[in-house]
Image (cartoon, rainbow, N blue to C red; front, side):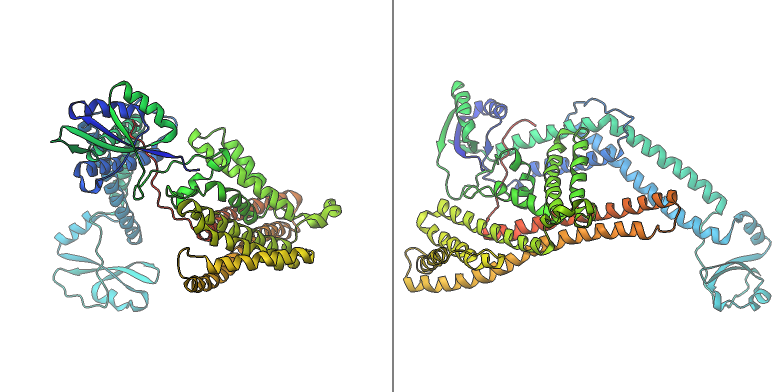
Length: 604
């Protein structure tokens, strides 16, 4: 759910403002209302640019840090020293880039000189002094003419990839007229190139060791410097958002506080005599969003933030889509064995990873549990069809068939769509009032009633005639309301026209949205079938081998094949449920989004 916020205005005498901001930062509950854009403030932009540089270097240090070098404690740096450290690291990075460019160029020269072979430029210079020119040539092998050997003392050096490499030895000043090209040769021989290349490798290695040492010594220092800059940014931004009144004598600041934290903040400020005033939240206020959910739903908050936070006037979608997402993942994964493997791996990793990553592993434990349940119910376990296993012959009729799975996918899709429209109706009621939500609720009753009357017989579930009549009556009444009262206060004929247009959009949209959920069945079935294919390959391709070789080859095929399949299943099982949530569900729930995350003014 979205935490309720309270809006406050603070008015402080200018000489007491620094002390007031220090206390406000210690309280750490006030999200400062942004009245002025930070894009127009050069100081804030400089701090953001510096923090971006720090974050890039910290990510770079993470890739370099060797486990055998423990991280040194953080050193407190002032801004000048911190910028100097950044420049030092960036200079080392620039030097590494230059060395790598030289290395790539030298590798190209060495590869080219290996075609010509090892020779000494000193000998060529001696011939030059004796009055002879040695010229290097290349041409397509088909165009090379042996007569060049007689005319210009051409010596064949190599044939490589249909290109002929040769030299001519002529007296100085001789004009050479042949159909060939003069290549640009490196300025040193192969032996010297290799020696320089080895020296270059040593330079790169020494530079890498220097940067690894820096990564161990200064990672925490960079982290502390970044936090100090964050504190400086927060303080500077708060000053930018402060209005100055009464000839700059009074400082006026507005902000938002979680209502549950407001009493403690008021008590602390009253104690020191600071003036504050609770204010009404206005319609155009961009109220910050703080989500508060139970342990299960909280795991899915990163998915909500991936798209957009809700705005303050609507509902938090997280607890509404969380169970659906878990079920969709299980349907797409489609194999109980894979789901069990995901659960086991995540359980093991949770003991070793940093606490910040544990919620993600817990989420995948739930998703793996869904895959285990769904995959077992559909009879697929590491690609093995449990229906064909003799040990399960007595219960094979209880496994969900592919036809039933497709039907279930459509049904669960229709359920989520109706649920989304119900959420949209409640949101309209909360935002605009009850009378504006009557038509949206009417459409929910119409769709539900018609789905039960005409959908259940398709599932071989027959309703008593009196129940059908009741549902049809509900649908008719709902349609009348949806047609005649969709825009309260407007002309009845205009409402009727709007109702016809809504009917068209509702029918076409409902059909297209519902059919999208068939992919849940298709993706899950594909994963199960592909797992079975790898099992068959492991058996068929190793037939005729002795038992030891066959066991090794089967194990390799199964490991590689199922690893590929698990990777594909994981990608598709994340992407398609996300699409169903962000496109189908959000559209039917009329999700608006655009909320800004609650970030209180506090010390990093």
